[in-house]
Length: 355
Image (cartoon, rainbow, N blue to C red; front, side, top):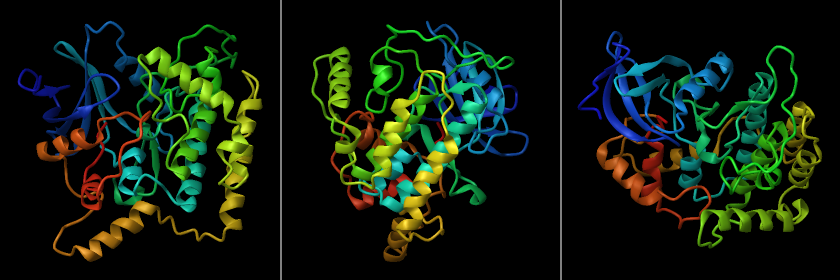
């Protein structure tokens, strides 16, 4: 595709393919006027259910929010639609692998504060995400934003209420599952129309996954996607929050149970949920230094491998890097892969996540 189209919007040059989003292809690009690096998402205009224009409209509605990527351009480029975005840092999924597929409680709690805050902002703009998972949250790339979490990939997002009247969408059932089964809410599995509560329950599953290293339903074997979704749903229903979170501070079960008690159109108490996790943070005596696990771990490796120019935000992806990533990490978030070696994981932090 890059041989056919070299520029989009007469400004953004396609340099090389760097990956795939939930749909379409992602390129690393350059603004030919100022040399700024950008991410360019490309989608064939002829696809059956185009998503890129919807994502662009969502980004417009969310523009200016903390942890939301800036849109540089959207439009037609030959047979494709193109969306030009900021280049961002590694995803939480990649950082989780780098840290041996488990985060410390301190890191989980720091992430909890930002993830709930991101959901509050997105919901305040009348949007629900509907595909909450570790790979859809990335860290900032600029030096001033290394500790900031960004929400990305709004291809499955939708409005849950009228922007002018705030009239909520009606309750509906018999819906097919939208999102990623491993982190979807129980109501989403049951075919109930999603709303704010479902995004927050999914955030809960992500946090518990980070803290425990895996979820009970991951690795479930099934002969079809439909059977897999059903088995995951059954396991979620049969695992009470108190059992799921028995090795964690009780606030994690409290959070999950709260999300499940919310009615379809009820506004969540976002601040109360953030306070819930902050109390654990201060009770444990954690310092407010914003030192996430990957920063601490990367510093250790940097000290022990002085001959390597190790920086989590330093260089761009190469074809060789991508082959290693695709080989070692092509499974989705529903599965659990063997831990990567330290040297293999270290490469994750050197690679920006442009998706």
